[in-house]
Length: 372
Ligand code: NAI
Ligand code: MG
Image (cartoon, rainbow, N blue to C red; front, side):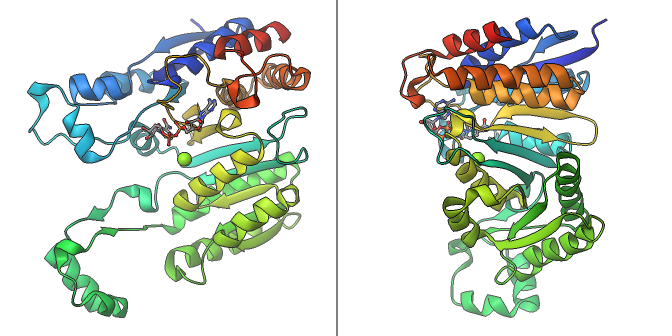
């Protein structure tokens, strides 16, 4: 039996193409692993009414961890319109598979490193090395949403919140409500993960990115928990920055920051900004990590405009493989992979379209594999 069982979830669009790139490199790495392909993505929604079929969840439960490519998600009405004829009108509702996976497996950490590689023509600066810890299970992504606003909810809100006065004359079908729910335990575990990472990787600061001056209860809870946890890490300084100001500081002085931690929605936005500072979505990997399972992916989506042409940059996906190796404890293999990626970028001979070149997804993967 192989040491690891790794699920491969290519998804659709460029997800499939960057997964091929990952497989090419994995072959070279020769990990003692069995790779198990599994179904996920838009075609399974259209054909079966479920983008994340039950059999895939079962496969995942038998695996050590998973690599995921990307999937297409569409709004409710468009999704319904693409369902197979016989599945329409049955009340099937499209749900993002990756959001479901994060919740099902309680993958509460979304770890997004954004590091500038020397020689990347897309770097905003060459001295950026950011790591974003985005909370991955709660906040606006929990799916507690209403439209129209149900009468009981309305009455309860009117009873308990003076802020509802503002909407007194608005009819319920003209009110949409998405709830931002945070729990103290949920705040603690993501903040603790950020501090633990800062300690083991030698970062002198952790920056909490929230908005407690306006969103008092939820962001306020993040601040409170962060201050408690920071006290346990006296060698690490806690910086508290409002999310809007953070967007500005990240453009002005990105080199000053190291580990960032935030709730789900703010973390999502800030991490795309951080990704662009080091070359864009083609360079940004992500790890969805829980206590005993993890799914690694590029943070980009299925990029339909580029799909089917093998022109997507596979570096984000290959860096996701690198994160997986780290998580598995395969330190040497992980470092070797990062060195090979850094070398290909620094040499600058093989470049995909986003870097101003004409190399294909697989050219790039082969170049990395050759340097391993
Ligand atoms: P996207 O990330 O798919 O693409 C946005 C743009 O970024 C592309 O048009 C391209 O210019 C650039 N880009 C992305 N990946 C690249 C790569 N590897 N190399 C070079 N350039 C790259 O985001 P978009 O267009 O907002 O969403 C497309 C679809 O993907 C939607 O259906 C969306 O719901 C889904 N999506 C899925 C995600 C996932 O699977 N985790 C995450 C984000 C979006
Ligand atoms: Mg995003």
